[in-house]
Length: 354
Image (cartoon, rainbow, N blue to C red; front, side, top):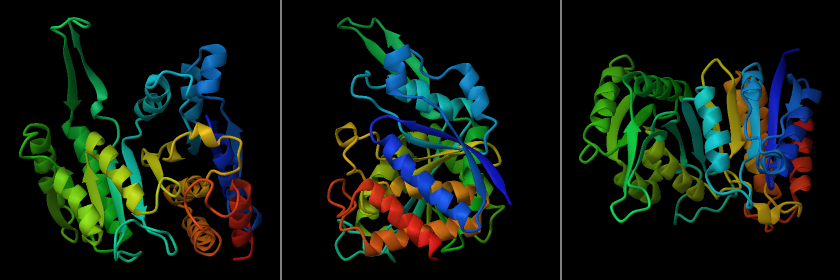
């Protein structure tokens, strides 16, 4: 039997609740002939920071490198200044573990409401590949004369040929493996960001020569946003930089049914990668059994897929589709028609009876 060591970071707010249901689904897979999992929990997040002053010790980062994957619930605490946890836990994990790909499926499942008129599951089925360790999030910049009337703030977008090309090649490979339309769209802003996206555009065209079976095109980020709303069926795989990827994937989450179903992977192919629901910690729902755990289960499904456990990933995806279609009235917290734990129980039941 295949065995995997998985680090679990439940985190803040509703994170522990949704992660518990994702683990429930993974355990059901193990009990029905799937791989075995050894889970090790790490106490990282706002509560730990408020209690001890610790954010992410170097020793913990080194330990996390030894796991096959990481499952994260949520990071974010109302009593901690915005940016402290995000920069010192989430972004540090991305940079220190070199998780250079952020993978975000935008898939409308049957039975899920989309705000887009006359669009259905056949129209909304694409993936965004976002560069995850460079760009504006690299943290290059600073202040001059801070706090004065003459203050200057500079934030620089760092784009290296190596970083851009490895992201692009991942996107080409993913598009080829996905085997849908085999169309890869570069999202940028070449008419204004003439240095950064000149590099992206040149590398994109050069990489395309090695993938003749993949159709390529380009669109400015503002056009991408318009087409995602008007004609999402245009897209198969979109590749873009860190900032634009952050923005368009939140739009993608809304058209696929909301944050309750949106999941993402922070990936370094062949090394420890981290998977999470993208909805945040939602502290007002903590402890109420009202938060939707489907995105966390979806994150576990993405983890299996990345680990090469295609059969288990398919089985878990089928269970997600069934619970969403048959049992949930809404993707929104408190409106699902059943509680957080009940959604997890139903998902595990579908796995066991498949």
